[in-house]
Image (cartoon, rainbow, N blue to C red; front, top):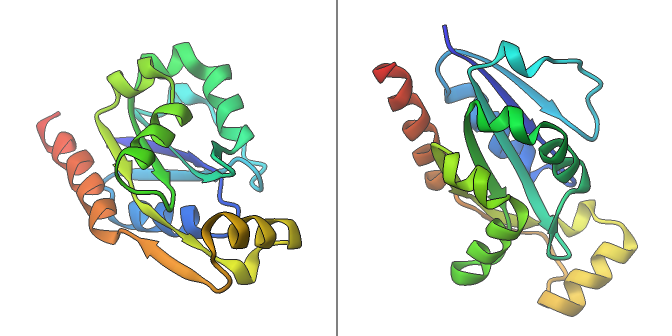
Length: 165
């Protein structure tokens, strides 16, 4: 049976929603670990596939995701990997943020890449975050732009590989 590790960071719950959808619909055994909150020890060697996901805050992916990629970079190149990003930007800007979030070597090796849209959850933000999204994006209330169909396509791509193996 295929074993998948999902490592992610979720600041306000959007990435966590995406991870839940992936976990529920992905074939095989799935362990999901929020690098910010979960204190779960895992060994990359135990997993066939590693999915890495995060979100963009002030133009950058979470530091814990960057640290994970840096620490396990060479091991990840030996695995089947998939990468996704939750962000409110669209088109070229979203692609640029994705490319800045994940090193080129990993992007080239990935079997699935996903841009899942995002959410501004003003109700869950601290004062500073609220000021930034108000100033930069003019957002003062919760707004969701989570792309469930993109998440499902990502899952289908991964599941179709499991049938072939």
